[in-house]
Length: 161
Image 1 (tube, rainbow, N blue to C red):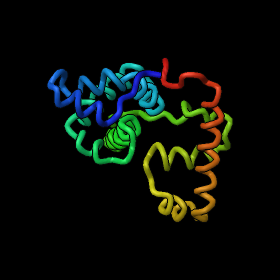
Image 2 (image 1 turned 45 degrees about the vertical axis):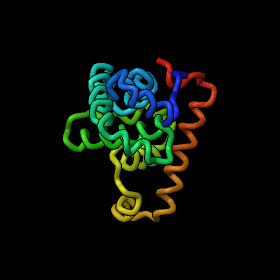
Image 3 (image 1 turned 120 degrees about the vertical axis):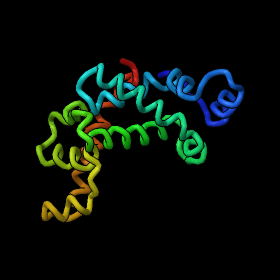
């Protein structure tokens, strides 16, 4: 896995004036985040373009990363997902749900995962619209996460391409 950095190291590197924030973040996290972005978009070129956009937008928001209880990479991943979902809603990204390791899952599992995780819908809203119990929706999502986790175990360096 690529070398991650702590918030203190990131702050020190940023304030030393050596590299612009976007470049520093990109150099440290692009490889790992690229694999994550590719889960959402079908093409390599589209994923690369989206990745550059993500780092450009997030570089100016590093104060939020420093204030977060999350690691820098986790913060980047969560914020990247928000940017990807925003672009999806604007029609700028063609999202794929089959690259998450849910090929063998039931259609109901894939539907819940797509609606909640890929499209960013709320659990309560989805349960209400589908006429299902919210706990059932949560169980389906939990099942999806377990399937994904099982696929990742033993894959070695997941972030490597």
